[in-house]
Image (cartoon, rainbow, N blue to C red; front, top):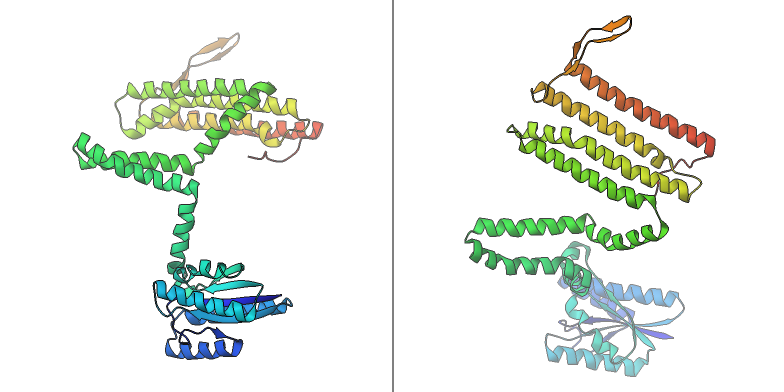
Amino acid sequence: MSTLVVCVDRRGDLADGEPVVGRDAIESLVMEIGVADPETSRVNSFLETLRVADDIEAEGDEAIVAVVSGGGDGVDADRAVARQTDRLVEEYRPDSAVVVTDSAEDERLVPIVESRIRVDAVDRVVVRQSHDIESTYYVLKQFLADEELRATVLVPIGAALLAFPVLLLLADSLTVAVSAIAAVIGVFLLYKGLGVDDWLAALPGAVRDAFYSGQVSLVTYVVGAGLAMVGLFAGAIDVSNTAASPVILGMRFVFAAVPWLALAALTASTGRLIDEFLAEEQVPNAFLNLPFGVVAVGLVVRGFSAYFLERAGEIPSVMVPATELGPVSVEGFTVTVWTRLAVFVLLGIAISLGGVRFTSYITTEEGVEEEFPES
């Protein structure tokens, strides 16, 4: 089996319209052109042609190495390449061909060679120093050929360009138009970057499977979402009734919302834990630790927000009233801000350690897998 390894050079005029055939002739051509113009990429393409021929011969096949040139640009150059290719095919009768090019312009000649002989491969030589410049054409070509990339990038840019003059006419303000477009593009980038589209695409199937399989977590997720909304609403109401600095407003929002948010997370995690118990004999430790961790974090965050608000005078100190239990009597006292913070932090640590102890006990008794669930 013989293979024609041909390097096409559309602009070159190498041998007065004749193909250059043979290793010795091409090596002489490399020296001649390399000395005349050391920066040309044609030298690399000629050497690549010799390398490909060596690889083919190493596999036991016959390789015919040649260089064809057009001598310029336009129709005449293409016809010159066609004539030289016809001459090579007629004289050597190869079974197939491998085309070597060094630019996108030369690669346009590949269909001419394909019309004369079967082309098994196209080897494009890219010089390392100019890799980015030479590859720009192919990057753009692949980008435009990818439907998903076009929809992700070109559609938002086109929509922004169309919306800009409309917003400029309606708002009569360049700042408003640019701000609106930037906000929409930002939301879209977050939507794609965070994978919200994939999550939304998979959500109907997950909900359907949850309904059919009778998962408890479906109900607890809905309850958790409702509790989270209550918490956000409670925080918003508390903030709306207060005129203070942004830091204080943020602390008040956290102080009011955290109990509800922690309860929502606890509800959702408990439902997931129940599903794991019902579905598998071995439950990962992460599901067992999660409810304890949620409560511990909620207590700590609540304690720190209360500390800042009490120091700012936004909430009163905790008062312990006087108490009498038979012969034992306790005088009333005020809990200091540091004591209040310490109690919340210690409670959080105690609950977290209790969760670890509970998980260790369950693991020892029932052989629970000590691994995290796959996301």
